[in-house]
Length: 391
Image 1 (cartoon, one colour):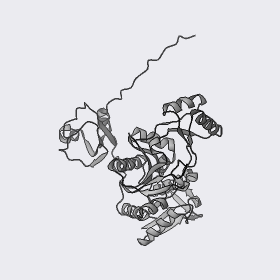
Image 2: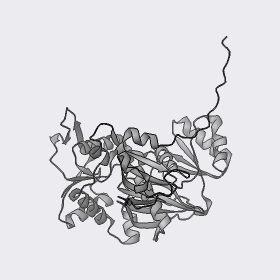
Image 3: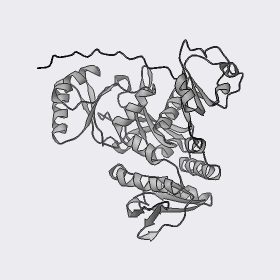
Image 4: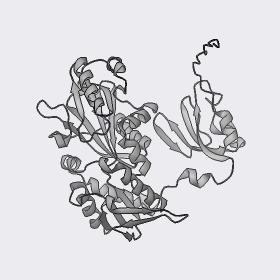
C-alpha cells in the first residue's frame, strides 16, 4: 500500500508514529504538508498538485487536519475522494466533528447522551439560556477552541453573563453548557477505529484545573469501558461519519455524556497510558479497507430511476410489529431490507424469519414512491395563524 499522511508537521508525535507503523508493515508512506497542495478542477478529470508538481498516485490517505486549516484541509481531502483514493476520514466527517454546535445537534438528534447545551446570540437570551441548562456553575465554550483552549468555568450567572458578553463583543460564538459536577476534572477519551473501541483512558485534571486535557497537564490512566460507554463512542463516531475518532465523554450519573468527537485524535497520551500500538491499529485498518473497500451503497444502488436507499422506522403500534420480515410483505412491494437496527445493534442482511419489534429501524433499498407511503407523517403541533385585518 502506498500511503499519504496529511500533516503540517512530520515531527509531531502522532505523525511520526503513523509513519513508523506503516514502515514496520512494509507500506510505502510519505508525509505531505496539507497547505502545499493546489487543486485543479476540470470536467471529468480532478487532479491534485503538490509543491506545483502533479501528485503521483496513492492508495490511501490518513488526514491529520488541524483546526486552523479546516476549510482548505477538507477541500484537499474532498479532492482525494473525487480521485477515488481511500480516505481514513471523509471530508464531511471532519467538517461535522470540527463544528462543536453542529456535532452536538447531530448527536442530540440520535439520542446520544450529551451535557445540556444552549446557544444564544442576543444579549437578552443569555440569562434564560443559563437557567435552561441548570444555572450556575456553567461551562462556556468557544466553538473554535481546541485542546481545552476557550473552555471557561463560570461560578455564577453574573460572571457567566459578563464572560459571554465580552466574547460576543469580539465576534466569538460561544456555547453555554451544563456543568456535570460528578465528573469534575475527569473525562474519558475512547479511540474508535471502524466499528470498535480499540483503547480508552481516563484523563484527570491536576490541582485546581478543571480541564483534563493532556496538553493542560492532565494525568492519564487506563480504563476498561463497559458496553454502554463503548457503544456510545462507536455510535457517536459513526453519526459524525468518522472511521477513526477520539470520543471524549463525561461520566455522568445518567451514563456517558459525549462532549466532543475528534477527527484527528492525538496518539501520545493514549499510547503512553495504554502501552498499545494505536498507530499500528490505524494502519492495519486502512490497509484492510484498501484491500477490501467499503461500498458507497447510495452510489452503487441508485442506478435505476425511481429507486433509492431509505430508512424505515417501525413505531409502536405499526402494522409490522410482531410480524416476520417475510410476513411484512416488504419483499412483495419490491423493497429489500439491507440492515436492521435494534437497540443500538446492527443486524446486517436479516433473515426473512426475523420478527419485527417496536422501535426497529430498517435500512431498505426499493422504489421511492412505495417507501414514501410507508413513512408515517410526523405528528406536529400546529399553531393556528392569527389573521390580522387589512388596514
